[in-house]
Length: 126
Ligand SMILES: NC(=O)c1ccc[n+]([C@@H]2O[C@H](COP(=O)([O-])OP(=O)(O)OC[C@H]3O[C@@H](n4cnc5c(N)ncnc54)[C@H](O)[C@@H]3O)[C@@H](O)[C@H]2O)c1
Image 1: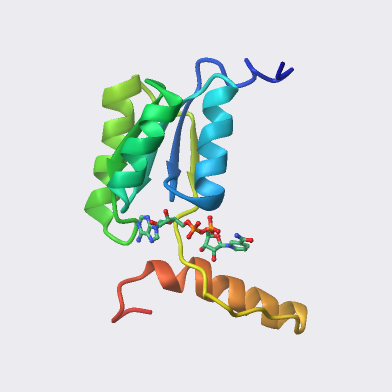
Image 2: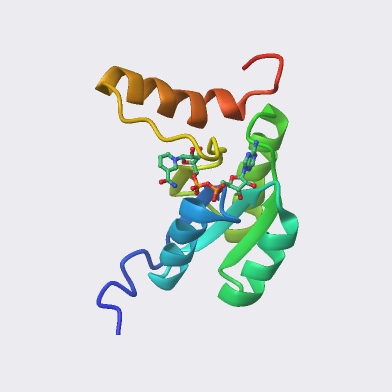
């Protein structure tokens, strides 16, 4: 039994990057602990599969976090589907496959910034 199963009961969260990895893990745990989750990702096939796994408190929408209009629609979809919005987890991003960096803190922050933020920007802005 999960002692935290009602910790987020009644809360509504948006999770971007929810079709995989960290975003999926956060979304799944939120649902298991009582929240409703508006899950946003580019990968609708995975979102559909996860919706089948987690049930009606997980609702997937296609959204590109680099597109402002998609963000607005994602928030509207959360309010339309679940009536409000309490929490937001912006996890969408891309890893640099095979790249591991064990340099200085500054170098490591630079790598993180590169993967989390710039990788979310359209090619011409990155
Ligand atoms: N996994 C780690 O140990 C780790 C450590 C530090 C930082 N990070 C960063 O955290 C982020 C998530 O990592 P992860 O391991 O969960 O990655 P992941 O590849 O498993 O999941 C990322 C998800 O984001 C989605 N996505 C990518 N671009 C998007 C966009 N523009 N709009 C909407 N969705 C988009 C993908 O479709 C995918 O489902 C990445 O930026 C990664 O670099 C990961």
